[in-house]
Image (tube, rainbow over all chains, first blue to last red; front, side, top):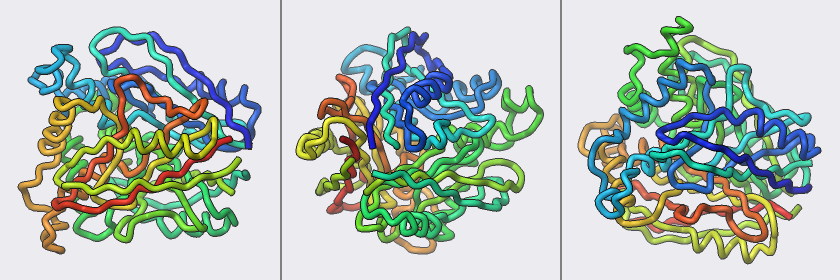
Length: 139
Length: 139
Length: 139
């Protein structure tokens, strides 16, 4: 069973920017030539994370509000007191959401639901150039 | 190394219905004939998620309360304003919990703790028929 | 494609003890002799979890505060009412954070970011001896 490694490059706006990466993932799985297995997406970053959502403007704005209410940007963080970089909340949101997602694929297609998209969420406080790692295992 | 694909079919009650799927997972791993590897469970849905818990009535009710307090069902959501389907909170809870779980198995047995069960949580607001994808990789 | 199973043994202090396990993971991947694949870490426990963070004292203390505020230790839980073991909040935090993490490795090295470490968080209310399962799949 081979392993195929890919990458997804993204220019984000930061500040809980929520980006649909479904098409890039589907393309990488198709290009792998593998029929069945798992695709693992990983953020090599401590200020961003991955999950799925119904990617429509309402749910996307609800998600931004949820993170702002749960882990507010405007309060003191010990991380900020030490490093003065103002992204303490970004680290907390990223740790809570998690940096990795593993999804099965069958007959060359990711097994997402009809109304389900894979999203990368950049919690950092400024635009960033990001490169996600995509590891495909299968046969 | 082969890949074995299975499914778990569930009739849920919705409304943060918490269902123990441990036995079904153990059965699928046993039926795969594989000795060592990982099993990935995935919800092809944007209103449900997966995790583990000590599956006893107290912890199960605490978990329902936790989601209701963190992400209340009775408030406005932009998703609801657009689609009028009333399950904005279901989408938020699902994105936070995450749609996937990957667990090792060794000597044909999932490496769960003694008091640890795998749960599927259906956050949607009505009973649903669900089919989870189970992808087993190993040798 | 072979599967290599390892373990990480930890003596924790409990009470949201946050432990950096990056070096142990890197060592296990190196010892596997595999070049490319995924490493899955799993907590066989319902009172602990895994994620990544920038492991510096500020962010670590922010993370402890975040869990205490989101899921307070000092309130009633149905789990405690039944079992009288006082760790109802530990179970909730563990279910929310999740018991598993899967990370790609390429050229024998885990694809973590520069400021990103893998952490094990023990939410239980007393010191524990823990053994994590590490499953490495690759080629």
